Length: 295
Image (cartoon, rainbow, N blue to C red; front, side):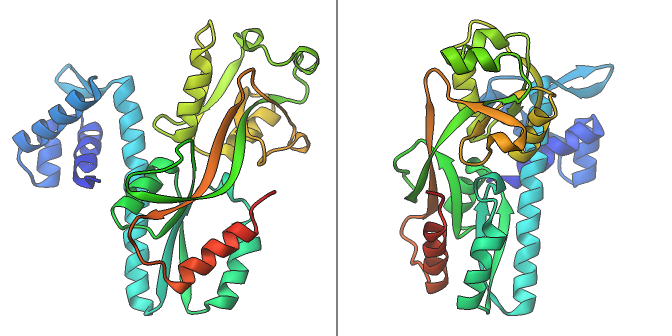
């Protein structure tokens, strides 16, 4: 992960100028220009347009900068936690997971772990599968709980926890519910509905894109949200429709969940880097995750 490149792009966006970004970061203007060119060539799209002498973000640029800021925030949090660890003298496990996939971690798992290992701290990072794979592969995290369709990974070990289904979520008052209960989901009946989707480059967004690619219409995207809990609340409050994991949300949350015509099944796995030696605390954390997995 090249956080310096992310810093370059964020600086250009904030300064609206390559030269001012270079002055701010104390680097040469050609160095920043080269990095920007490499990224745009790799993505196959422009991140900035020049208007009236200023660098203005394109739609793709806005998505990239928002993602860059999220990654930078997670990275800075990790560094801060490392500094705290060095000061405390305690051992630490860095664990990445999406809170929506493990909502009861602090209640069902963390207290049991503390009893077993009172001198080992667990530093948690709320991150998606992309962040988790990057951190694990680069030695910045010890363990992660991620959603995936892959049975294996070239650099990571996967330990199956449970299977999940991504389902269509409607407000309980939605008029299409009787038809869907009788005949199953027909997404063409929702072509005028606002969709609440996950952020670009997330695993769940890739599943959503796959679902929507089979629709004969272009969805009206109300917003893109990283937090599945926020998506659920928006659906319950009749702001739009979304796709949510089966085991996380029930009808009592104000949402009705329906299987899609072609069910979208994915795996929730415990992941760690291949070749590492699992310490006693990490093995015990894995055992607690397996013991408390939803049936």
